[in-house]
Length: 361
Length: 72
Ligand code: SF4
Ligand code: SF4
Image 1: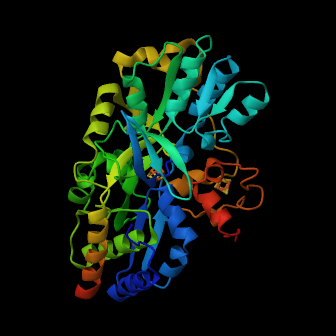
Image 2: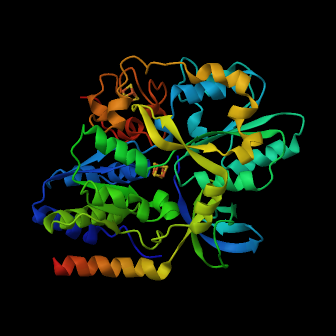
Image 3: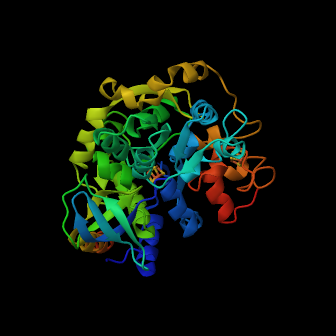
């Protein structure tokens, strides 16, 4: 395959970014982008240019709320087999995490794919299985396809899926950060295509580039944003066209439309963001954990859980603080003993910063 | 969480295929979101192929980078 790690080319792009003289703040909303930036030292290289890169609410694990964790713990404690992606295991709810529930005897199982969870449910018809549906548009189509595959009666889904473009609108409307450009997540875009981002350019005049995940992809996307600014353009450009088609993935979009409906959900660090959640539609309500176990779960819905004391994940997810600015970073809060979700997930800003050696200030 | 990685389709059986991720890693992947053929490269996330990688476009991308660098 083609070489996207070419160092000479990277250096040339970096020089061009510097030469452009553009001074601007760009935000990305993707844990994988943050990983590429930090792992390859691009963030340090960019310091010699006028460009600052902020990280937004880019990791679906980090933005999951304590209420959603509490819902899953409640079901686990009630004897239902809870299947989750590994990242979710140690995310703190009000007090305990799913790992604690497991330690206390609940049946909590890590799966790599929703298909594994379906298989487990089919193989063990005497037990009830719940799959915790986490993720943005990259992950959601799998949930939809599982719903369309005639799941067994002992299987249900706790949908915690969220969508990216409308969350960006909310972020921009909050006005805490002045953004000059957005680096859009390549794999979310592989599903939804280019059109859903359009309003951010037309209504808010923000230049955008859909970016891949190699170092060169990111540098080139940053360069493309500086060019838009220089030329006074604000449009959606697609640097990752080897994977992202303008129309996205029509089969995936269709599967989502058939099975899910928009809902208003809270994101960690944010208030309720209208229309950014995806709930299972009435037609498939037999497989909706919130319908199936309404008696168990409804008391949790209106509860208010404070963020862990001292944790700045909210500020980090909104792009107004860096992990190193959190007084607990690298001290009370480390990957082995995370205080907040940004230190738990591999794609969390605090965990990435810690892994690559950015110790506290 | 939603890290997605490229691999090459080496076997097809209905919606289920085998994908080679290199270094001897071969996994079963669900293809129901795509139309694919053996030999295609796909991006895989949580057991599902979410999109094809177009090799021609990949080379095109690098050429475009060159051009952008020359032009500006
Ligand atoms: S879910 Fe997708 S967009 Fe979000 S962090 Fe993961 S790879 Fe990036
Ligand atoms: S370092 Fe820990 S406590 Fe501080 S913001 Fe990150 S996750 Fe929260």
